[in-house]
Image (tube, helix red, strand yellow):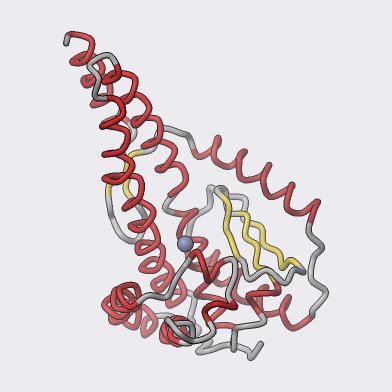
Length: 256
Ligand SMILES: [Zn+2]
């Protein structure tokens, strides 16, 4: 019992010291890793990708990526990352932004986009994950989870805690992160001067039943279900207000 109390007190202390606030949403979160550690991890993974995938030579795609990545990075006003972006030649419909600001979009997902503003939303959503340090947050909760499991093991509640925290914290967590990245993504694209309505138009094309079985990569891990689109609609007025304030408006940008 004493060890349990000590461990709980320790967990409390760790959680207090690891608290920070997510940019744009103001949500409190708990992170144990430093920005530097996450940057190192992101850089290592990015170099791996770059050694395996060829860069796209499609001039239109590269120009669209140039425009939107520059504008979005400026809109983050975040200088701690060594931002970098690239377009990979691959049929996979994928996009990501690694911790530390390493952004990549695959030509496969650009093939199903109509314009630069749709690209801006996908890239902004990915930038949001990195800006909100969602992977750092997941690592921190993973550490708390294993700490809890080892403490409760001797009392026989280890397995119960493990499954409860898996379903109670870890799973809803990834859903929460997706919604947060959507909300932040809408605001970021608007700040960068892109019409946030393009995000909903992009999603709406991929709602259930519309050739969704042929989708892979990003579109399958980011399903455009009704709840998600509904949540994005709720954030649209704030994004449109941000768009109205944007000094240089690009609208939908170039066609791609
Ligand atoms: Zn996401």
